[in-house]
Amino acid sequence: MTTNNATKPRGTRYLADILLGVLPLLLGVQFLGWVTFFPSALRGHSDFRQLYAAGYMVRTGHASELYDYRAQETFQDTLVGNDERALPFIRPAYQALLFLPFSLLSYRSAYLTFLGANLILLAITFWLLRPEAKNLARIWRWLPVFVFLVFYPVALALMQGQDSILLLSLLAAALVSLGQGRELTAGILIGLGLFKMQIVIPIALLFLLWNRWCFFAGFAISAGLVSLVSIWVVGLTQIIVYARSLFSVGAGLAVDQFKFPLRVSIMANLRGLILGLMGTRLPAFWTQALTIVVSAILLLWVAVSTSRKIRAADALVIAITASVIVSYYLFIHDLSVLLIPIVIALDRFIDAETTGDTLNRAVAWTSAGLLVAPMCLFLIPDHFYLVSLPLCAFMFILTRSFRREPEPAASDDR
Image 1: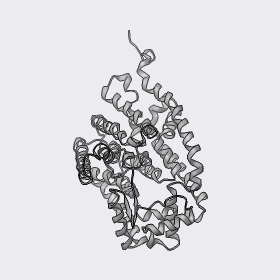
Image 2: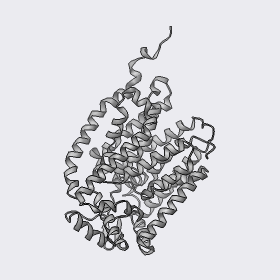
Image 3: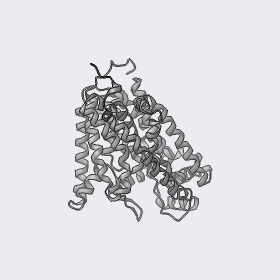
Image 4: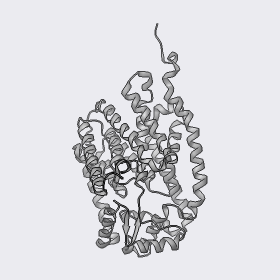
Protein backbone atom coordinates (compact mmCIF):
# COMPACT_ATOMS: atom_id res chain seq x y z
CA MET A 1 0.00 0.00 0.00
CA THR A 2 1.51 3.34 -1.03
CA THR A 3 1.21 6.66 0.74
CA ASN A 4 0.86 9.86 -1.27
CA ASN A 5 1.54 13.44 -0.18
CA ALA A 6 -2.05 13.95 0.88
CA THR A 7 -1.78 11.26 3.56
CA LYS A 8 1.62 12.23 4.91
CA PRO A 9 1.74 13.28 8.57
CA ARG A 10 0.85 16.89 9.21
CA GLY A 11 4.10 17.29 11.14
CA THR A 12 6.04 17.40 7.91
CA ARG A 13 4.79 20.97 7.37
CA TYR A 14 5.84 22.48 10.71
CA LEU A 15 8.07 25.14 9.14
CA ALA A 16 5.40 26.42 6.76
CA ASP A 17 2.81 26.46 9.55
CA ILE A 18 5.11 28.35 11.92
CA LEU A 19 6.03 30.82 9.20
CA LEU A 20 2.38 31.55 8.44
CA GLY A 21 1.67 31.96 12.16
CA VAL A 22 4.55 34.39 12.73
CA LEU A 23 3.70 36.66 9.78
CA PRO A 24 0.88 38.58 11.55
CA LEU A 25 3.14 39.29 14.54
CA LEU A 26 5.90 40.61 12.30
CA LEU A 27 3.44 42.76 10.39
CA GLY A 28 2.18 44.19 13.67
CA VAL A 29 5.70 45.20 14.68
CA GLN A 30 6.22 46.79 11.26
CA PHE A 31 3.01 48.78 11.63
CA LEU A 32 4.03 50.07 15.06
CA GLY A 33 7.42 51.04 13.66
CA TRP A 34 5.84 53.07 10.88
CA VAL A 35 3.40 54.79 13.24
CA THR A 36 6.24 55.71 15.60
CA PHE A 37 8.93 56.72 13.12
CA PHE A 38 7.15 58.17 10.09
CA PRO A 39 6.10 61.55 11.62
CA SER A 40 9.64 62.01 12.94
CA ALA A 41 11.15 61.25 9.53
CA LEU A 42 8.96 63.89 7.90
CA ARG A 43 10.43 66.43 10.33
CA GLY A 44 13.97 65.59 9.24
CA HIS A 45 14.95 62.85 11.67
CA SER A 46 16.02 60.35 9.05
CA ASP A 47 19.12 59.23 7.18
CA PHE A 48 17.70 60.79 4.03
CA ARG A 49 18.81 64.23 5.25
CA GLN A 50 22.44 63.55 4.31
CA LEU A 51 21.54 62.26 0.83
CA TYR A 52 19.17 65.16 0.22
CA ALA A 53 21.74 67.76 1.31
CA ALA A 54 24.46 66.10 -0.81
CA GLY A 55 22.29 66.36 -3.91
CA TYR A 56 21.57 70.02 -3.13
CA MET A 57 25.27 70.82 -2.65
CA VAL A 58 26.20 69.34 -6.03
CA ARG A 59 23.32 71.10 -7.77
CA THR A 60 24.13 74.51 -6.31
CA GLY A 61 27.85 74.48 -7.07
CA HIS A 62 29.18 73.32 -3.69
CA ALA A 63 30.46 69.93 -4.87
CA SER A 64 33.99 70.87 -3.83
CA GLU A 65 32.73 70.94 -0.21
CA LEU A 66 30.84 67.65 -0.37
CA TYR A 67 33.10 65.93 2.18
CA ASP A 68 33.61 69.00 4.36
CA TYR A 69 31.67 68.21 7.51
CA ARG A 70 31.12 71.83 8.47
CA ALA A 71 29.61 72.55 5.06
CA GLN A 72 27.42 69.44 5.31
CA GLU A 73 26.26 70.52 8.74
CA THR A 74 25.37 74.01 7.48
CA PHE A 75 23.37 72.73 4.53
CA GLN A 76 21.56 70.04 6.52
CA ASP A 77 20.63 72.52 9.27
CA THR A 78 19.42 75.06 6.71
CA LEU A 79 17.53 72.70 4.41
CA VAL A 80 16.19 70.13 6.88
CA GLY A 81 16.45 71.48 10.42
CA ASN A 82 19.07 71.93 13.10
CA ASP A 83 17.41 69.87 15.81
CA GLU A 84 19.50 66.80 14.98
CA ARG A 85 23.21 66.18 14.57
CA ALA A 86 24.25 66.39 10.94
CA LEU A 87 25.00 63.06 9.31
CA PRO A 88 28.20 62.89 7.24
CA PHE A 89 27.95 61.95 3.57
CA ILE A 90 30.52 59.14 3.20
CA ARG A 91 29.56 57.70 -0.17
CA PRO A 92 31.27 58.02 -3.55
CA ALA A 93 30.40 61.38 -5.09
CA TYR A 94 28.67 59.86 -8.14
CA GLN A 95 25.76 58.88 -5.93
CA ALA A 96 25.04 62.51 -5.06
CA LEU A 97 23.99 62.98 -8.69
CA LEU A 98 21.13 60.55 -8.08
CA PHE A 99 19.71 62.84 -5.40
CA LEU A 100 20.17 66.04 -7.39
CA PRO A 101 16.57 65.95 -8.78
CA PHE A 102 15.17 65.35 -5.27
CA SER A 103 16.93 68.50 -4.05
CA LEU A 104 14.62 70.55 -6.30
CA LEU A 105 11.82 69.75 -3.83
CA SER A 106 11.38 70.67 -0.21
CA TYR A 107 12.78 68.10 2.22
CA ARG A 108 9.34 66.73 3.13
CA SER A 109 8.30 66.35 -0.52
CA ALA A 110 11.69 64.88 -1.44
CA TYR A 111 11.45 62.32 1.38
CA LEU A 112 8.00 61.21 0.26
CA THR A 113 9.09 61.07 -3.38
CA PHE A 114 12.12 58.98 -2.54
CA LEU A 115 9.95 56.71 -0.41
CA GLY A 116 7.76 56.19 -3.48
CA ALA A 117 10.84 55.48 -5.60
CA ASN A 118 12.05 52.91 -3.06
CA LEU A 119 8.67 51.20 -3.07
CA ILE A 120 8.83 50.98 -6.87
CA LEU A 121 12.34 49.50 -6.64
CA LEU A 122 11.10 46.99 -4.06
CA ALA A 123 8.24 46.01 -6.37
CA ILE A 124 10.72 45.55 -9.24
CA THR A 125 12.91 43.40 -6.99
CA PHE A 126 9.89 41.26 -6.10
CA TRP A 127 9.05 40.87 -9.79
CA LEU A 128 12.63 39.85 -10.56
CA LEU A 129 12.69 37.28 -7.76
CA ARG A 130 9.15 35.99 -8.27
CA PRO A 131 10.34 32.97 -10.34
CA GLU A 132 12.50 32.04 -7.34
CA ALA A 133 9.47 31.93 -5.00
CA LYS A 134 7.17 29.44 -6.73
CA ASN A 135 7.27 26.90 -3.89
CA LEU A 136 6.38 29.59 -1.36
CA ALA A 137 3.47 30.67 -3.56
CA ARG A 138 2.20 27.08 -3.66
CA ILE A 139 1.90 27.12 0.13
CA TRP A 140 -0.03 30.39 0.01
CA ARG A 141 -0.19 32.67 -3.01
CA TRP A 142 0.55 35.78 -0.91
CA LEU A 143 3.40 34.26 1.09
CA PRO A 144 6.20 35.65 -1.15
CA VAL A 145 4.71 39.13 -0.84
CA PHE A 146 4.57 38.94 2.93
CA VAL A 147 8.13 37.60 3.15
CA PHE A 148 9.22 40.83 1.46
CA LEU A 149 7.05 42.98 3.70
CA VAL A 150 7.99 41.49 7.09
CA PHE A 151 11.78 41.63 6.72
CA TYR A 152 12.60 44.45 9.13
CA PRO A 153 15.81 45.75 7.44
CA VAL A 154 13.74 46.49 4.31
CA ALA A 155 11.13 48.37 6.34
CA LEU A 156 13.84 50.32 8.15
CA ALA A 157 15.51 51.25 4.86
CA LEU A 158 12.16 52.57 3.63
CA MET A 159 11.54 54.54 6.83
CA GLN A 160 15.04 56.05 6.94
CA GLY A 161 15.07 56.99 3.25
CA GLN A 162 18.16 54.83 2.79
CA ASP A 163 19.66 53.60 -0.47
CA SER A 164 19.83 49.93 0.57
CA ILE A 165 16.76 49.12 -1.54
CA LEU A 166 18.61 50.38 -4.62
CA LEU A 167 21.46 47.97 -3.93
CA LEU A 168 18.94 45.17 -3.35
CA SER A 169 17.38 45.78 -6.77
CA LEU A 170 20.81 45.87 -8.47
CA LEU A 171 21.71 42.54 -6.88
CA ALA A 172 18.38 41.01 -7.92
CA ALA A 173 18.92 42.18 -11.50
CA ALA A 174 22.45 40.73 -11.41
CA LEU A 175 21.03 37.42 -10.18
CA VAL A 176 18.64 37.29 -13.13
CA SER A 177 21.48 38.14 -15.51
CA LEU A 178 23.61 35.32 -14.13
CA GLY A 179 20.71 32.93 -14.53
CA GLN A 180 20.64 33.89 -18.20
CA GLY A 181 24.39 33.40 -18.60
CA ARG A 182 25.17 37.13 -18.92
CA GLU A 183 28.03 37.40 -16.43
CA LEU A 184 29.45 40.61 -17.88
CA THR A 185 26.12 42.37 -17.41
CA ALA A 186 25.84 41.02 -13.87
CA GLY A 187 29.29 42.36 -13.00
CA ILE A 188 28.40 45.79 -14.41
CA LEU A 189 25.25 45.90 -12.27
CA ILE A 190 27.20 44.97 -9.12
CA GLY A 191 29.82 47.63 -9.88
CA LEU A 192 27.11 50.29 -10.01
CA GLY A 193 26.44 49.46 -6.36
CA LEU A 194 29.84 50.80 -5.29
CA PHE A 195 28.04 53.26 -3.03
CA LYS A 196 27.87 50.25 -0.69
CA MET A 197 31.46 49.20 -1.33
CA GLN A 198 31.70 47.26 1.93
CA ILE A 199 29.23 44.78 0.39
CA VAL A 200 29.98 44.76 -3.34
CA ILE A 201 33.78 44.59 -3.13
CA PRO A 202 33.80 41.24 -1.24
CA ILE A 203 31.34 39.91 -3.84
CA ALA A 204 33.69 40.96 -6.64
CA LEU A 205 36.69 39.44 -4.85
CA LEU A 206 34.93 36.10 -4.50
CA PHE A 207 34.05 36.02 -8.20
CA LEU A 208 37.67 36.84 -8.97
CA LEU A 209 38.83 33.94 -6.76
CA TRP A 210 36.33 31.72 -8.56
CA ASN A 211 37.98 32.69 -11.88
CA ARG A 212 34.75 34.14 -13.25
CA TRP A 213 36.58 36.66 -15.39
CA CYS A 214 33.58 38.03 -17.30
CA PHE A 215 31.82 38.96 -14.10
CA PHE A 216 34.90 40.62 -12.64
CA ALA A 217 35.58 42.46 -15.88
CA GLY A 218 32.05 43.88 -15.81
CA PHE A 219 32.52 44.94 -12.21
CA ALA A 220 35.84 46.62 -13.02
CA ILE A 221 34.30 48.49 -15.96
CA SER A 222 31.39 50.00 -14.03
CA ALA A 223 33.42 50.56 -10.84
CA GLY A 224 36.05 52.41 -12.86
CA LEU A 225 33.39 54.47 -14.59
CA VAL A 226 31.64 55.59 -11.40
CA SER A 227 35.03 56.35 -9.85
CA LEU A 228 35.88 58.66 -12.76
CA VAL A 229 32.46 60.32 -12.46
CA SER A 230 33.11 60.86 -8.73
CA ILE A 231 36.44 62.55 -9.46
CA TRP A 232 34.75 64.72 -12.09
CA VAL A 233 32.01 65.77 -9.62
CA VAL A 234 34.17 66.78 -6.63
CA GLY A 235 37.77 66.90 -7.82
CA LEU A 236 40.79 64.89 -6.73
CA THR A 237 41.31 66.84 -3.50
CA GLN A 238 37.88 65.94 -2.15
CA ILE A 239 38.38 62.31 -3.22
CA ILE A 240 41.43 62.22 -0.94
CA VAL A 241 39.34 63.66 1.89
CA TYR A 242 36.70 61.01 1.20
CA ALA A 243 39.31 58.24 1.33
CA ARG A 244 40.56 59.52 4.68
CA SER A 245 37.04 59.57 6.06
CA LEU A 246 36.59 55.92 5.07
CA PHE A 247 39.77 54.86 6.85
CA SER A 248 38.69 56.77 9.95
CA VAL A 249 35.49 54.76 10.27
CA GLY A 250 37.40 52.26 12.40
CA ALA A 251 36.98 53.80 15.84
CA GLY A 252 34.37 56.33 14.80
CA LEU A 253 34.20 58.63 11.83
CA ALA A 254 36.41 61.65 12.41
CA VAL A 255 35.79 64.78 10.43
CA ASP A 256 37.52 67.96 11.58
CA GLN A 257 37.05 68.10 15.36
CA PHE A 258 33.90 66.01 15.33
CA LYS A 259 33.61 62.35 16.17
CA PHE A 260 30.84 60.09 15.00
CA PRO A 261 30.99 56.91 17.04
CA LEU A 262 29.60 53.95 15.17
CA ARG A 263 27.65 51.51 17.30
CA VAL A 264 29.56 48.43 16.29
CA SER A 265 27.46 46.40 18.74
CA ILE A 266 24.51 46.67 16.34
CA MET A 267 26.52 45.35 13.39
CA ALA A 268 25.54 41.74 12.62
CA ASN A 269 28.91 40.91 11.06
CA LEU A 270 32.30 39.57 12.12
CA ARG A 271 33.50 42.99 13.17
CA GLY A 272 30.53 43.44 15.49
CA LEU A 273 30.86 39.90 16.86
CA ILE A 274 34.60 40.12 17.57
CA LEU A 275 34.35 43.57 19.13
CA GLY A 276 31.29 42.54 21.14
CA LEU A 277 32.99 39.45 22.54
CA MET A 278 36.60 40.63 22.76
CA GLY A 279 36.37 44.44 22.85
CA THR A 280 36.98 44.69 26.60
CA ARG A 281 39.72 42.04 26.58
CA LEU A 282 41.87 43.13 23.65
CA PRO A 283 43.33 46.50 22.63
CA ALA A 284 41.62 48.18 19.69
CA PHE A 285 44.56 47.41 17.37
CA TRP A 286 44.42 43.67 18.02
CA THR A 287 40.65 43.61 17.75
CA GLN A 288 40.93 45.29 14.35
CA ALA A 289 43.71 42.95 13.24
CA LEU A 290 41.76 39.88 14.36
CA THR A 291 38.72 41.09 12.41
CA ILE A 292 40.76 41.50 9.23
CA VAL A 293 42.44 38.10 9.57
CA VAL A 294 39.23 36.20 10.34
CA SER A 295 37.40 37.97 7.50
CA ALA A 296 40.15 37.08 5.03
CA ILE A 297 40.14 33.44 6.19
CA LEU A 298 36.37 33.25 5.81
CA LEU A 299 36.46 34.66 2.28
CA LEU A 300 39.20 32.20 1.31
CA TRP A 301 37.22 29.33 2.83
CA VAL A 302 34.15 30.30 0.82
CA ALA A 303 36.22 30.58 -2.35
CA VAL A 304 37.88 27.18 -1.83
CA SER A 305 34.79 25.33 -0.60
CA THR A 306 32.86 26.40 -3.69
CA SER A 307 35.74 25.94 -6.13
CA ARG A 308 33.83 23.14 -7.83
CA LYS A 309 31.81 24.89 -10.51
CA ILE A 310 28.41 25.71 -9.09
CA ARG A 311 25.75 27.69 -10.90
CA ALA A 312 26.71 31.35 -11.26
CA ALA A 313 23.42 32.51 -9.70
CA ASP A 314 23.99 30.24 -6.68
CA ALA A 315 27.53 31.61 -6.41
CA LEU A 316 26.07 35.13 -6.12
CA VAL A 317 23.69 34.01 -3.36
CA ILE A 318 26.63 32.65 -1.39
CA ALA A 319 28.73 35.74 -2.15
CA ILE A 320 26.00 38.10 -0.90
CA THR A 321 25.78 36.19 2.37
CA ALA A 322 29.54 36.12 2.84
CA SER A 323 29.92 39.80 1.97
CA VAL A 324 27.46 40.79 4.68
CA ILE A 325 29.41 38.77 7.24
CA VAL A 326 32.82 40.25 6.36
CA SER A 327 31.63 43.81 5.63
CA TYR A 328 33.68 46.42 7.47
CA TYR A 329 30.66 48.29 8.71
CA LEU A 330 27.08 47.19 8.43
CA PHE A 331 23.97 49.00 9.57
CA ILE A 332 20.69 47.20 10.08
CA HIS A 333 19.14 48.54 6.88
CA ASP A 334 22.15 47.12 4.98
CA LEU A 335 20.88 43.66 5.89
CA SER A 336 18.17 44.24 3.26
CA VAL A 337 20.36 42.45 0.70
CA LEU A 338 19.94 39.23 2.70
CA LEU A 339 16.39 39.10 1.38
CA ILE A 340 17.78 37.47 -1.79
CA PRO A 341 19.52 34.51 -0.06
CA ILE A 342 16.60 34.12 2.36
CA VAL A 343 13.92 33.98 -0.35
CA ILE A 344 15.90 31.62 -2.60
CA ALA A 345 16.97 29.24 0.18
CA LEU A 346 13.55 29.21 1.83
CA ASP A 347 11.77 28.56 -1.45
CA ARG A 348 14.18 25.89 -2.62
CA PHE A 349 14.25 23.89 0.59
CA ILE A 350 10.95 24.57 2.36
CA ASP A 351 9.71 21.13 1.25
CA ALA A 352 12.79 19.39 2.67
CA GLU A 353 10.79 18.22 5.69
CA THR A 354 8.82 15.92 3.40
CA THR A 355 11.98 14.47 1.79
CA GLY A 356 13.92 13.72 4.95
CA ASP A 357 17.05 15.56 3.74
CA THR A 358 18.65 16.81 6.95
CA LEU A 359 21.01 19.32 5.35
CA ASN A 360 18.34 20.95 3.20
CA ARG A 361 15.95 21.01 6.16
CA ALA A 362 18.62 22.88 8.13
CA VAL A 363 18.94 25.43 5.30
CA ALA A 364 15.18 26.01 5.31
CA TRP A 365 14.91 26.47 9.05
CA THR A 366 17.98 28.72 9.23
CA SER A 367 16.72 30.94 6.41
CA ALA A 368 13.35 31.25 8.17
CA GLY A 369 15.21 32.16 11.35
CA LEU A 370 17.13 34.91 9.55
CA LEU A 371 13.83 36.34 8.33
CA VAL A 372 12.87 36.92 11.96
CA ALA A 373 16.34 37.55 13.46
CA PRO A 374 16.49 41.34 12.83
CA MET A 375 13.65 41.71 15.34
CA CYS A 376 16.30 40.94 17.99
CA LEU A 377 17.12 44.63 17.77
CA PHE A 378 14.16 45.24 20.08
CA LEU A 379 15.13 42.45 22.50
CA ILE A 380 18.93 42.74 22.69
CA PRO A 381 19.78 46.16 21.20
CA ASP A 382 23.23 46.23 22.80
CA HIS A 383 24.05 42.70 21.65
CA PHE A 384 22.62 42.71 18.16
CA TYR A 385 26.00 41.50 16.92
CA LEU A 386 24.92 38.02 18.07
CA VAL A 387 22.68 37.85 14.99
CA SER A 388 25.92 37.22 13.07
CA LEU A 389 26.06 33.72 14.60
CA PRO A 390 22.94 32.33 12.85
CA LEU A 391 24.05 34.25 9.76
CA CYS A 392 27.40 32.42 9.77
CA ALA A 393 25.61 29.11 10.33
CA PHE A 394 23.34 29.87 7.38
CA MET A 395 26.32 30.57 5.13
CA PHE A 396 28.14 27.36 6.08
CA ILE A 397 25.05 25.18 5.60
CA LEU A 398 24.03 26.96 2.40
CA THR A 399 27.50 26.53 0.91
CA ARG A 400 27.43 22.79 1.55
CA SER A 401 23.91 22.41 0.19
CA PHE A 402 24.51 24.43 -3.00
CA ARG A 403 27.77 22.59 -3.61
CA ARG A 404 25.87 19.34 -4.02
CA GLU A 405 23.82 20.69 -6.93
CA PRO A 406 25.47 20.24 -10.36
CA GLU A 407 25.95 23.22 -12.64
CA PRO A 408 24.10 23.15 -15.95
CA ALA A 409 25.95 23.31 -19.24
CA ALA A 410 27.78 26.59 -19.78
CA SER A 411 26.09 29.23 -21.90
CA ASP A 412 27.65 30.48 -25.12
CA ASP A 413 27.42 34.04 -23.76
CA ARG A 414 30.02 33.47 -21.10
